[in-house]
Image (cartoon, rainbow, N blue to C red; front, side, top):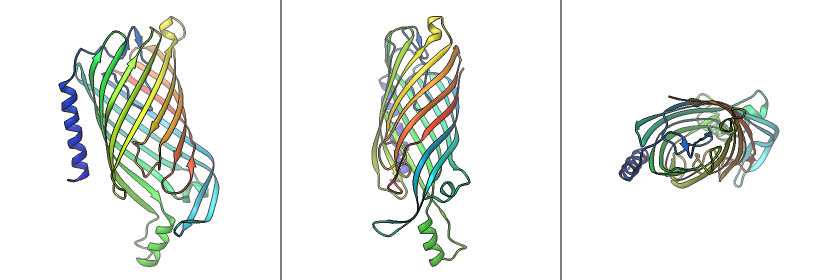
Length: 312
């Protein structure tokens, strides 16, 4: 079966199972009187109707980038050191179709930018484009705890710089047919659970866990996983400043293997304005650890996102 059709079939089957086990009505993103502060880094278990936009910048400094590698095992013929920058927007919209069910769509574009040699010519990921569909189903809820089922399907394209292949193509098919960029297309299906807990009226904890199936054109099929969590405090709900603080941690193997060759780990923080119930506005930052699949280099970028989430 075509891997894309198989991913869609998995989504439909899991969605049907989740809908069959739903119970209790949703009350938005409040538990125990606490209004949760969400993170842009990963989804949350709440059934809410909202639009989200984030614009992010990632900076990896002091990177030793193999500029040209050749042979098996590869020898680095030339390398450059410097900083690599990635920038791009993300859009997401979630719609409540039932008081226990919400569906969502998302789109993301991330591109390497810069004018230095290492930014323009280094081997590895040059751009990443992703479109996704997903759904959340509320499974169980009491005064302070929420449990939801999550399912997501994403289609992505990764553009990679490959100087060795470019040189080989010039020699075999001519410069007119040679390209310095290669592409990987893929699909990822994931399903799991999301939980939220509010121990009091001014703080909360959110955790998600997902397993997924990934298919990349030039790779074998992979069964992958992701675990992430956040803790938040909203001072505005204590009649103080309308400021929410957020701490996040994320261990992710669901991202396309063309981008990361192992488990990507991130630790982040956020400061958001919480003075309005229908709006979250602020900044989130994260330090990440990315083992690269295309060459033996680990990148540790620091990223910052300007986040806007509006609730209807």
